[in-house]
Amino acid sequence: MDELLVRPSLEDELHIENKAREIMASEDHEDTARLAVALMKQNYAQGQVLCHCFEKIHGLEAKIICMQNPVIQPKRPWWMFWTS
Image (tube, rainbow, N blue to C red; front, side, top):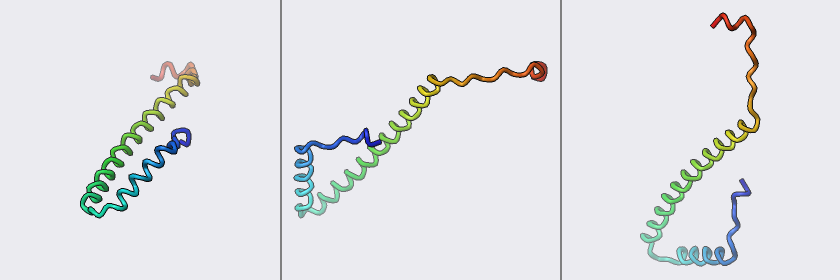
């Protein structure tokens, strides 16, 4: 999972810190509450997308492994041909 994490650039970190300080310094509590609600909803939606993507990736990786390592079914004994 660590290979999916990307460290933000110094410029991005400074931008994020600047925006965070603007929010903390805001005295408009209604605006801050609306922002918090919007971020909560966005976080939930992004979490759902990530979950779906990881499920798809897992399924595709499993298919690749099965294609690379096919299971050879054993042959049925001669007496089983007449019992079915």
